[in-house]
Amino acid sequence: MQATIHNEFLTLTVDTHGAEAVSLKNAAGEEMLWQADPAVWKRHAPILFPWTGKLPGGTFEAKGKTYKGGQHGFARDVEHTLLKAEGDTIQLELRADEAIKAERFPFDFVLTSTFRLDGKTVHHTLTVRNPGTEELRFGIGYHPAFNIPFDAQHTTTDYEFRFDQPESPVILDARPNGLLSGKCYYQWKNQQAIPLTNDLFDNDSFCMAGLHSRTLGIYEKDTGRAVVCSIKDFPYTLLWSKPGVPQFVCIEPWNSLPSMEGSGTDWMKKPAAAILAPGEEWSTTLTTRFVR
Image 1 (cartoon, one colour):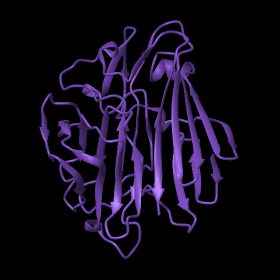
Image 2 (cartoon, rainbow, N blue to C red; image 1 turned 120 degrees about the vertical axis):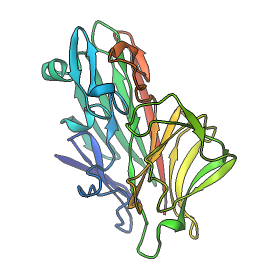
Image 3 (spheres, one colour; image 1 turned 45 degrees about the vertical axis):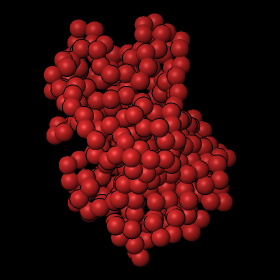
C-alpha cells in the first residue's frame, strides 16, 4: 500500500513495504528519486535496520541461535503499518512480532518512520524504542537514491558532490565484499567538491568518516540546482552508485558501520548506533533540501 502527501513544492509517496519513499516530485512534476529499474538497482530509498552493511558469512548469533541476515538488515524488506498520512506527514511503524523474533531478530523493538514535508525540504525521522525487558543493540542508516541527470540537457560530468567546507575525509575500506578491512585511505584532500565522473564508482562505494561539514549535496554546476542532505549529526556518510555511467547517486548518512572482516558472528559485538535499556528511545533525522 502507498500513501501520498504534498505541498506547493513537493509530492511524496511512501510504500508500506519497507517504509520506503518511492516517489518525490517537484512542482513541475519532475521525478527526483530513482525509480528502481530492476536491471540496474531495484530500490528507491531503503532504510537500513537493524544493521548497516553486511555480516560475516551472512549470519549472526544471538541467544544461542544462528540467524541469517542479508545486507543492511531486514526493515527494508517487510511490511510496516501505516499510522498516519495526512497534512504534511506520513508515519509508519514496524514492531518485532513473533515471526520476526523467531526468524530474523530475537529482540523486541519498535521502529517508527516519520516523513514530513517543509517547503522544499523533506525530514525523515527514524525512532527506535525498546519495549522489552533486555537491552536492544542496533545499527541504522539511510540510503536515498537521486536521479542523475536532472534533465535531458545535462550529462554526468555536469554534476559534482559538494560539501559546505573543504574536507579530507577518511575512507574506511570495505572492498570488495562489503565488510570493513581495517584499512583506511584518503581519496580526496582539502577538497570542497568531488566531480561526478562515469568511473567514480567502478570500485563500489566510499564510506567517509571524520567529516566536519553540515551538508553534502549533488549539484548541477551550471545552474546551481541541487539535492542537499544534512550530514552533521552522522558519524559516517557514504557515496554510492552502480558501476558505469551513473543513472542515480546515493548520499547515505549512517549512524553505524558494517562488520569487520573476521569479526565473528556474536551480535553483542557488532557495531551499533545505540544500545537501549528497556523503555529507552533513540531517534535520528535525515533532512534533504531540493534546490530546483
